[in-house]
Amino acid sequence: MNDQFLRACRGEEVDYTPVWIMRQAGRYLPEYQKVRSKVDFLTLCKTPDLAAEVSLQPVDVLGVDAAILFSDILIPVEAMGLKLHFYEKKGPVLDNPVRDRKSVEKLVEIEPEEDVPFVMDTIKILRKELEGRVPLIGFSGAPFTLATYIIEGGGSKNYLNTKRMMYQNPQLFNDLMQRITQNVISYLSAQIDAGAQAVQLFDSWVGILSPVDYENHVFPHIKSAVKILGNKGVPIIYFVNNCAGMLDMAKKVGSDVIGIDWRIDMSRAVKRIGKKVSVQGNLDPCALFMPRERIREAAADVLNKASSARGHIFNLGHGILPETPVDNARALVDAVHELSRR
Ligand code: CP3
Image 1: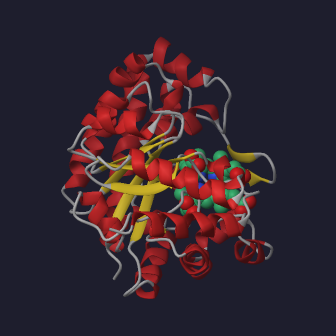
Image 2: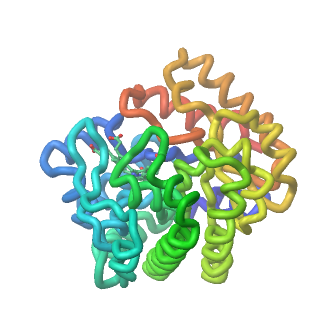
């Protein structure tokens, strides 16, 4: 198996810098569109054969060094008791958002094998299909990012309901975070038991918080989750979107890797993170709209700036956009492999 990704996660020597792309299975790929034209998004997530098929597409088409489970961060949230809808062009919507004690207490403690068996089935298919090829990454939303969806009932601009609960009823917010964290732990443990060889926690919206709120209301939860999951023996990646304000704390969470967005210079991020944790990132997803030659230069710049990190997994600083030309994504993967060959 190509184990460059796992080696970089652990800070071991590599032959070249491994690369994968957040949201690499998705709408920018014609192969994905073809599968998706026959089923809606949630059906795709819940049909293991199809979910496995689209997970494999970027491995075949782009030549990335890791596959990621095809699913969504909101799948376990539905299992917690909030009905989930994906409306075209509107993004996810959850019925009955949770804003009071009664609704917090109604949230279900999930049993992954019973409540979301299709996730574990997809992982098992993928491990067979990927044998001798690349490792499989499992994932979950991080507790805070899931809390925003659970409280807001969907995406949000100012996250006012979330912050209102945090400021007006911190005890309730804490209880909610604790319940979510417990579910994230059991969900990721089940993915690892089913065969996930690394797991990523997506903290996509944590960057809306002030550093002090992050420290008081989020850090203790994510830290306890990473501590427990760390005992499962697979690398843990903590993706912190908009991380600049909280990097000094995020590095203390205990993950093997910190995922960095593109708004911070990678060399400054590496300096702040130090030598105990590997880094992942951090090219601006829009850089894939540059001319091919400039993409190569931009990749070289990130590689260079991450060169003193304990380990580096090349990635975009957030998910690939649906409008991205596939050839440019492939050119990026090739450039990273060529430029970083030791
Ligand atoms: O990385 C991968 O290729 C694995 C698949 C994956 C998806 N969602 C598929 C998806 C992963 C890892 C996610 C995570 C996810 N989902 C996050 C965290 C990552 C991030 O980008 O910050 C978040 C915030 C979500 C919630 C979500 N799912 C939103 C806001 C949307 C709608 C936005 C949009 O682009 O339409 C989704 C839908 C979604 N998740 C799609 C895919 C391929 C598009 C669905 C479609 O086919 O129409």
